Image 1 (tube, rainbow, N blue to C red):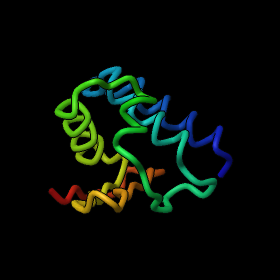
Image 2: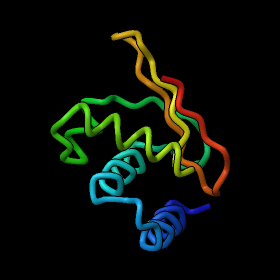
Image 3: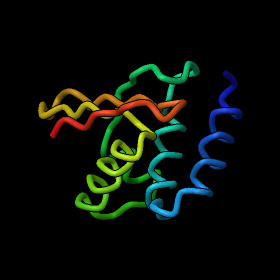
Image 4: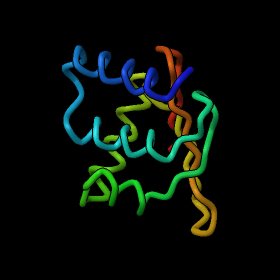
Length: 102
């Protein structure tokens, strides 16, 4: 799937999802920017980079948005509690069941 198609699908779906706020869309697009070419694959993310790119200033808002994107079926997120290892994210291409391990 072309990346443009994946972005288009997300934006069309997001436009019809009243639960999403600009912070959710901004965070998803930041993850999309850092994602590999193959959708659905897990990749490493840096909270600091994602917050900077998405313009989210609060760690609480960042975690709230991640948790809700998982609950709404947009991403799969596996946090790392190790300060030297990045967390893992996969952008879901369908309304599959996602998990947030807190």
